[in-house]
Length: 353
Image (cartoon, rainbow, N blue to C red):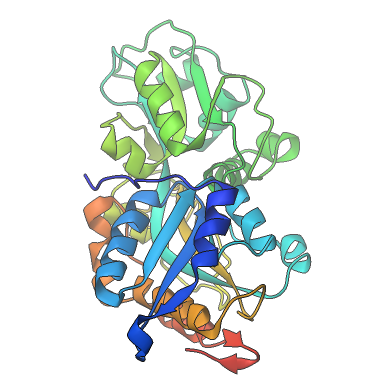
């Protein structure tokens, strides 16, 4: 598997990296820039690969700190990073508190249910059952509702240990958005958010933290970005989609969730898709940047480098490499729409595409 990113950036470190800005090499027209971003841990393996490849191609370096989607958005609001990574698009309320931004999806992934159930190789679950597990209403693995979904399995009479994110997280938003669609009780009690007061279970920080806890805790179940479950070879629940199909998370089933019309600003969720063969907790992940790039002490070269990075993330070469680290490429229609959105990015009101 692709190596995970080498360095976690604190807010101070992110600020320091951004301050490096761009350097004109030997007074020529060749300008190299150091870009910084922070946010979602879910796409880190893909970003680690993509940013390394981009650095080799362009001469620009990109430093990314996986501090959770919420932290990345806060850093962008504080204007100390070039971009934020988020698994949740900004709400209308969040956007009203900031200068205009552009959402650029980078790939598709999924939130999976990693399971540590020594006695059972495969478990089938429905969205309603998962909602009741994380709400504390289903407490045992041999609960009658789980048994009904797995009639041939010998489920143990063991307490379920739910594992959830302790940090503000786009992964949590995707997961709870899905639960809110399939469970009225979940929707009215907890809703969809980057941070939720889960009533039962064990907290862990980041996707790596949840994956680690699940792998080390028998009879646990945790929601995780698919790459982390793949990397640790965790068993994953087979989920029932809105068509009644039981679907495992694969590149194909994740991509299937994005079939259909998508909004021009790319702010959309594809959880609980009604497309045939769709894995039901699929999602996009975004890089979010300010539409007007002249803020703080940013230079036009930084703005151009930021746009160049966004264009690279949407390139055929980069999209076709997503599967190497367990992600699905964007639909062609989403790439086309996103390139048009990038053209809206300006520096002092002038386009820098």
